Length: 238
Ligand code: C5P
Image (cartoon, rainbow, N blue to C red; front, side, top):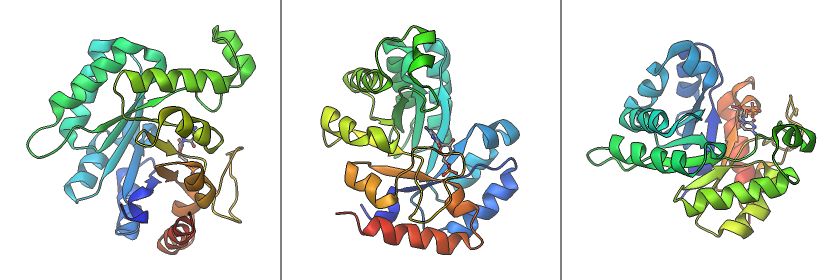
């Protein structure tokens, strides 16, 4: 795996055109592009299809959470679209996780393998008191580890987790578990609304498999140069 394969650029745009233009500036400098709720709700599957058809890998970040049958259908549709990675909420439970895996496998056809299915454990926006309101016992860190273990034992490929959680998760879930980490800020970059950030090198050193980076690259005056600088920083990871 080359270092650029580990870089996922978040295309948080409200038009497919703006996202596609950004992709064109970044071709060859990122291993994958993340299509999330804003772009998908604005434009539907058009952007993800465009990216797949133009040879790029896509992480469909729609965090599915519904009854198993509905999630199965959504994962089947995502796999048919040709995405490489998708995610669901671990809080949907074991049956929903199984259904997601089944749907993803059913939708993959030909020489295309099943997309990686990742779990979102506890949203990083939730603090201990929010979990208490929700009736989830214990500190957020233990809920994260508990849900990650559950996802792993149900056969999911990995989790999305903040840099703060990566090393504990890596220890808990072993070397092959995929850990995708957002909230990355290159040395010297603005934090924006992210509060617990890590540099690309620190996140990789802690054990992240992939980094998700949006605004530090897509909001830079020269996105290609910003991506190249991030790749340099990633390269320094031991
Ligand atoms: O622009 P920025 O680098 O902050 O973008 C990070 C991306 O990762 C966004 O698409 C955001 O939705 C996503 N994300 C996050 N924090 C999480 C989970 C996902 O920033 N805990």
